[in-house]
Image 1 (cartoon, rainbow, N blue to C red):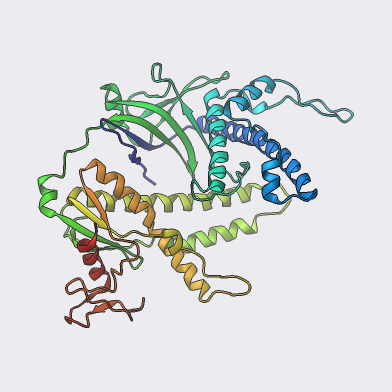
Image 2: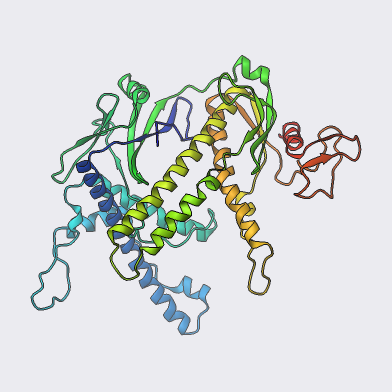
Length: 469
């Protein structure tokens, strides 16, 4: 898999844009061990901070449950239970510093030695811990905000398991004395700590674009996240880049005007006007769906069966199981990289060639809801709906919309949308007649008023172009 740097953040101010540049790494076997040690330390630090929060929460629940047992309602008990202070990052950090070198507290069996607390903290940069404490705070706050209705609800924060959580760590540094920096265009320096010296890791491809901006004072690196995806390690470098938004679209974009985009499954997108996906190729109005998940499904299913056969419940993972698990992870990583490439290519061409982009307002969560129903009212055609859900998620409607939004701001392009319930597929774009009897099986739109006949999705794209505001 070939992976290169890509900027993928919509955060932009008047003169500064917060951009993320993602680079594939080529670490040596010794460096892989260091990266895994950093990631394991960050995971343990996250669990340490979350454990403090959960302990306080469980104590509060015991108080509340006693009040409920005495006859209070749950709402009354929630208000009457004593308020306990949940430790935040600073408190977790202070407690960790106080106890990290001390033996565990508790009784010992005969002949046992008292282990030292947190043996994973050595030979790791301290900032990998502090950012993990921040991540625990964010996970806890997201759960609370979901309960309060301030954001979509999320589940109760979970501890990160050793063999199933994503290996990653994040490091921030001081902007006045940066520790994270490029050495040349093909190496990046990762800070050390705790007896581990700083080390440089080779990049799979050049970082010339960002390195030159940093050297010229046009960009400042603020943090870096290193993570393993499948068989590769990646470094996502966050930088504040000097950015002057364009005053408006270019002359070529203004001449092209507006384009309507209808996302779909049979075709990735149907366009109201032609789009050049690559230089020297003819323009297209139908962008084909690469069907990446469908093309990888057989290999993935075979690899997952091998992994399942090698798993023995209650036993430590064998070498064969770990190899099969790595094979499954590699296939998923390749699939994700191919999907991201297709999405970035399509969205980049859109914002480069048109001054206005008209989109649908999609409720992806509702579109991909399960059809299984309940025990009293079981759903119909559950397997077919599950297959449609997988196809929609494989295309990535939400990600394509997100990319168009932030890339449009970088290119002086305006994004318009039609209302969520606008019947773009059932309305004739010429005369406005609405076909109320149309079904999903009708792939041709036939107007009962003016007689116009054309592809259903092409008609929808034209309606989106004409009616987006």
